[in-house]
Image 1 (cartoon, helix red, strand yellow):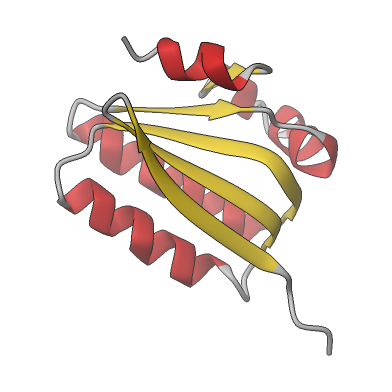
Image 2: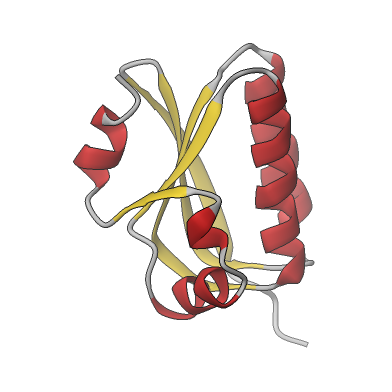
Length: 116
């Protein structure tokens, strides 16, 4: 069985926690990302931006994790936004009508400044 290729990095820009996701976010890779993001939420960050420019694939466990984190941040009066969604992940978000739930931006800088 092939190992899922997935990496995520966190940056902080202007008080926004930016998570850059690359590769395939699936059942084999989601727990590591989820724990890192939950730690950021626990530390008090209320502004989270997912940069999905290099996210190639996402499955139901990846979608579920993003939705759960969105709910947790929202319950703490924060916000989660998504930038540069494309390809298969964009098709999934659209199919599930998540484009009506999340604020989405084609441009990373516009997504970042939208938190101000």
